[in-house]
Image (cartoon, rainbow, N blue to C red; front, side, top):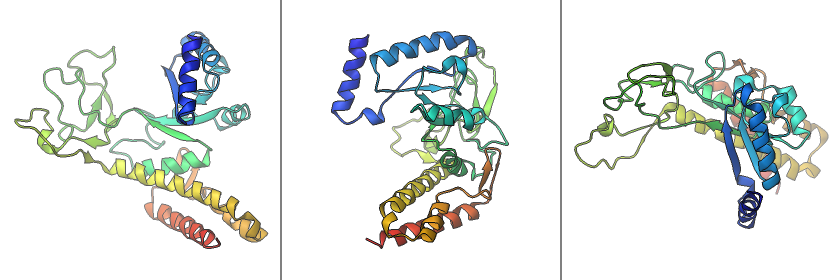
Amino acid sequence: FNAYGRSVQEHLRARGWLDKAYVYPYDEPTEADYPRVLKGFHQLRAAMPDMALMLTEQVEPGLIGGPNLWCPLISFYNHEKAEERRKEGEHFWWYICTGPKQPYPGLFIDHPGTDLRVWLWMTWKYHIEGILIWQSNLWTTAKAYPDHPQNPYEDPMSWMSDGNTKPGDKRPWGNGDGRFLYPPESAADARPTAPILEGPVESIRWEMLRDGVEDYEYFVILKQAIHDHEAALSESEKAAYIELTEVPRRIVRDRRNYTKDPALLERQRSRIAKTIEKLMQQN
């Protein structure tokens, strides 16, 4: 196993992919699973010492020394614990899925349209380096619809499909959970009479997530531009620009208190964009 792991790691390194690769061996372990999970991560660390090893779980004492890329649910993220792990060179993503529900931002149709965009502002605020969403095209589940596929336009709910759900049972996960892209309407019942060549249909939530990712990149670009032009800036200019790299409290106070007003996001993004342009013109 060690030889195989090392060969995979070096293959990725040789092609310049190592910084983009990660191993995702366990998903949402229970506390009873921690000893087994930790043992598995120790084996992976020995075989792939330079590889990102990701776990969808919050920082817990029984897991320290295992993953070096933590990905907790946003409601379980603890910033103080995360900062301690960052001092050890570890990294953080976070995710949303069937939960949490309000007052946290979510991916559900019945949440404010700005939720997924603001989530990326939170991501920047808490020094999170990546986001995870479990699925984008969950149109039907065989447990809820054992006889025929679900039409996601007529039934917006995403239904549970775990081992505890019996065929025909409808146990809700949430409206639109795992469903950002939709089939063409002509294929919505999954029984087309002829080939369908139309592309997928985007959702507003998908587009808001895109806007949030772009907002995050604006912060990245601004931070780099300040660094690149630091020598030419006065102390007051530098302080004003650095302040723009911080998320205002009127936009995100914490994970449960944040704006639902898109105008605030647009105005702040415009300020950042104009500052980037101003810095770039100094070349």
